[in-house]
Image 1 (cartoon, rainbow, N blue to C red):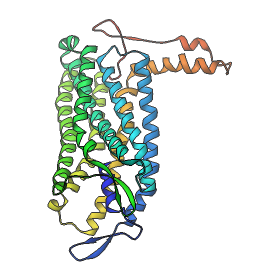
Image 2 (cartoon, rainbow, N blue to C red; image 1 turned 60 degrees about the horizontal axis):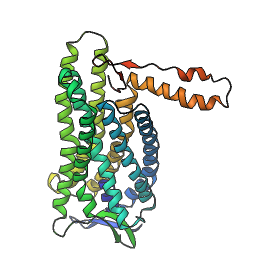
Image 3 (cartoon, rainbow, N blue to C red; image 1 turned 180 degrees about the vertical axis):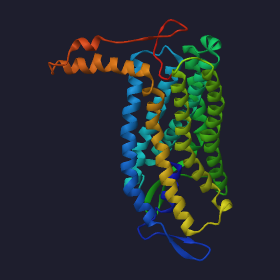
Image 4 (tube, helix red, strand yellow; image 1 turned 120 degrees about the horizontal axis):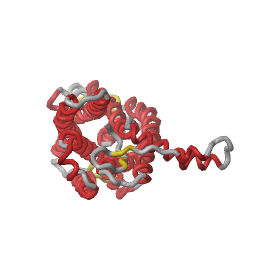
Length: 359
């Protein structure tokens, strides 16, 4: 959203608005960038919203349906809630891009901006927790029996939301609804003579918390997991290892372009000489990479839930018990007996019925 508002700020005047290249005083047209965003971003954001909403709502329903008796499921539920918070804020940005004006007032500007980043950072933090949880369960299985409790999962979830809230404080403070050229925009209003510092802070914060930290933890934890799996017999270990690589590659591919463009935008006067063509290219790159980053909330339910065999079993059970049973009242050939069938997996370590999503 920061990249979105930055682009809109640079092109948000009128149809004839131009930005000058100060080196040669040649007007730098930004109208095409604004028109491109108004045409392409709303349908793309809407697609992300619909797909992400369906996937994450299914995860929330099933985790609540089978009760939160495992720490992994607690983290997965919170990850789905994080994505839903992000998707709720996306509705307002769709309207913002479509009409090129913020009409929801100053309070909603602060609230929606904070909600956006709250969902963004909490999503990343819960992905980190899921990675650490998987590492403990596989590499330190004996210790995990004592540590991976429901109480510990709840405590860690609360602390994670607190950290996400602290990381989002600048958005709640500085974002304001401002009037520019007879139109209202929702942008951060930093103190005078400190705007560049806060932009650099935002870019570094996002790159450290949103890319460097999770990638580092993933590399360390998944390296240990792979070493442990390679020592274990059985063919399923190769499936688990492939899933590990999918998780890491997907996270890297979806988040790296966004963070690099954000960094280039903040340090553009240092990395290269600013001119009209480069400015236009950077604006387009902002829009494209931001959509790619948004799409990650649609991928989370797939890689963290739907690929798990146990999740698929419970999804089928939920579908048979509720959907098929309901439809069976109106469609005679749907057998209600199938709705009573269910297969549970038993945890080899605890002997309890387990509802786990990965591995």
